[in-house]
Amino acid sequence: MLAAWSATSADAPAKTIPEATPVAEPLDPVETGVETVSREAETTPGPTELDLTRRDGLDMSRLALLAGGGAAAHYVGFKYFDRAWYQGQKGSSIRWIHDWSGDTYLNLDKGGHFMGGLFLSRGLSGAYRWAGVGNRPAAILGTLTSWGALLEIEMRDAYFREWGFSVPDFTANTLGVAVPLLHALVPASRAVGFKISYWPSKLYTERRRRSRDPVQPHTDYTIDDYEGMTFWMTLAVDHVLWGRAKEAWPDYLGLALGYGATGLHGSNAKSKGRFREYKDLPDARPEIFVALDYDARRLPGHGDVWSSFKTQLNWIHFPAPAVRVYPDVRFYLLFI
Image (cartoon, rainbow, N blue to C red):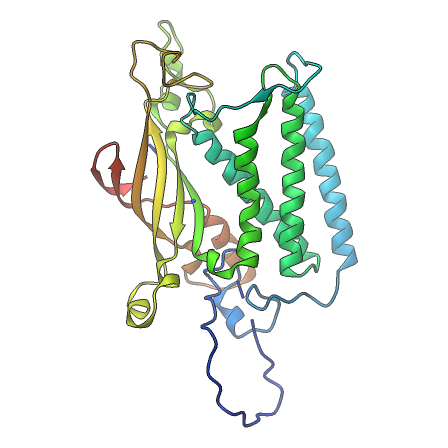
């Protein structure tokens, strides 16, 4: 079974400045989650997440590279999908799908759409910053570009009888792409993050045996193995503490609320209700977990490459002590 950055110049002569009352404690650069740099960013001049400033203008060569790379990826990607994906019967009007009930995957697929939108939006926001766009404009552009790309995909699905335009899927996409923008505009929201964990379920690991007669629930592809996935909303606890409690709490340790499912009936098969795929099997059940969470960005070491790697690691909720609180209580020394 199975969810930043400022500096000052050291060259200017020292001056005596009247002591001022601090307005607010600055955000921890590792907790912001919009753009990540190492701890040395606290003392090294450079563009950071905390000083919402921009570089010295746009880097036109980088902007051109970004535009060209995006156009090429768009062309190649959709050419591939046109051949490999969109081969079914195409209709003349949009096929609207309102699958809010989650009878198939108990809405875990919506978690995949949410995380996909978030990943794309954060990546594009970072690419715009790399090209010299300021943090907030980059977040806006990253959100809009990602939303437009996902809308195009959903519109391509819309006319095929096998797929259709899923309103819940696109709603999840929209919420996901908006997270980096929310983090940029409302700094306090950066205490909340989103991660995923995965451990292959028996639906996938026993797929060959289960696909033989008599056929049993199974899934042929990892991407459809939702029973093996858990989606997490995380909280950076030290971000919301103050005083001695903040000093005592380990900065790498957070809390996470997870959502998963057990008893799914396989790929594209209804898993609950009277129309479920396997009538002799019970309905699939949602599961809710509370667990500890580790912030990979707190790992020791500096440098651009290492800091970037730590940022990517932080998409993963690593094995940690957890308790299942629904549908019943169960404790895990390490929940994977």
